[in-house]
Length: 203
Image (spheres, rainbow, N blue to C red):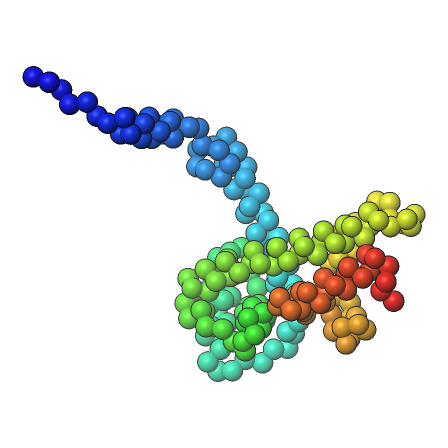
């Protein structure tokens, strides 16, 4: 009785599967040596980004008046932020959702009908703030690195950027850069302004 021999491509596929199964997990794969450290770093970065987002939103929308149908949403956002480690007032929660809504050119976005949906939206949108700030911080670092001023030695670009974003700029019509960076068009304007500072052409 003869035994059927599997085709070569079947054996090759089996060998490949076994090779994948025997590979050690790396990076953010569960079980990797760096998994716990990287997840902890991600959590700290998210908390920092979320805190910055809350500060920007509060500054941009102080004294915000809510419509009746927005109060329930704001309460859900407040509870969602609490789940994400930020214990804020309902007024601050409302300002965060308003800031997020305006970044999408909307008055008040849907998505906060439940605590779960609000938390998911906040979690997914927060990295956009991080990416934006990293882009601006790279320019701020370049400004410091290219500076010949004695004060540039030991200068903190991140602290300077945080302060600069909250200062009304004449070239922005008296608006603060922080009020513009949540939209692609606004970010482009702020990026050009920082670039002008870096090149020394800004007056």
